[in-house]
Image 1 (cartoon, one colour):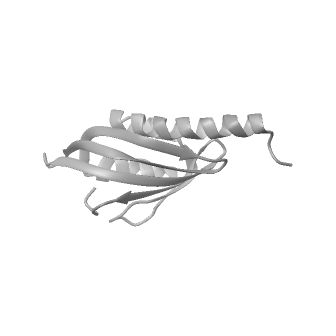
Image 2 (spheres, helix red, strand yellow):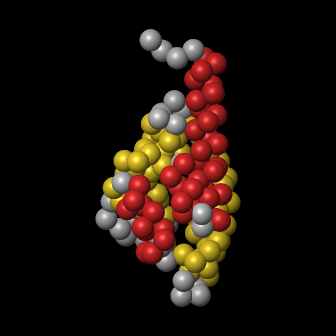
Length: 128
């Protein structure tokens, strides 16, 4: 049986909020809060890296491997449906080597159990 329109609207709004919360948490470098956003079995695809499988692996990436030291995601648009979504925006920050980072990005998501189940990032160059 299909969800009611009210339930579906709430689910879509929750998914949009989850995407905005993701970037807020990343910009704060609050890696443990990622547990509230990503499904335990997250599959994350990011240019220049092998697929990240599982929440522990994803948190390890952010804590130890990510080349970005700090910065801010400016989200231009988030679009979500029942179980999928996309967003695009602009990131401005600093790399761990002190270099400036100024990147446009887009991402696609799937949602499961109120969390992000899959994430795929797209950059205009494979540098971040």
